Length: 146
Image (cartoon, rainbow, N blue to C red; front, top):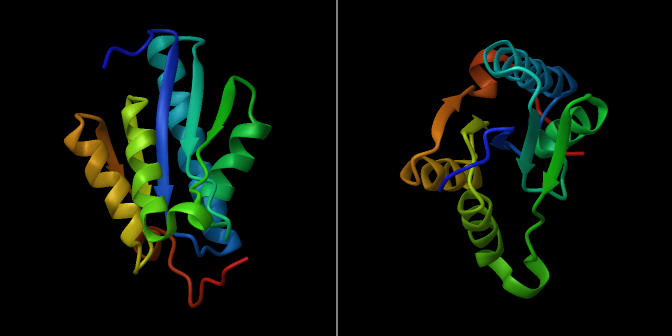
C-alpha cells in the first residue's frame, strides 16, 4: 500500500497491563521516533494508530501522548467484543494493518497474545518492525490493570 509522503503512520501495540513507569517508557520511545522522523523528513504529521484497549495499558499511554503532542494525531480502533466476541481483537488488528503504516512498534508484556497477533500481521504486510519488551527494558515488580 502506498502511503502519503506527508504522514508518518505508526501502529502501536502492546500490553494491556502497565505501570506508570512503563507508560512513561512507551511515551519516551514514541517521542524518540517522532523526533527521528522529523530530523529525516521534516515537518510531517505523525499518526499513532492504536487499538483503544478498554483496560488501559500501552494503548492508553500512546493515545495520551498523541493527544498531548503537537504534530501528532491519534487514530483509535476499538474492538467490538460485545458483538464479535473473541474474534474482535484479531479482526481489529487486521483492520489497523490494512489501513497501512510505515512502522509497527510493539511493547509486549510477558503475556501479550494480542500484541503478537497485531505485530505478526503488520510484519507479514511489509510494515517495518520495532520491539521494546516492557519487562526487559522497563522492568516492574507488578503491572496492574487500570
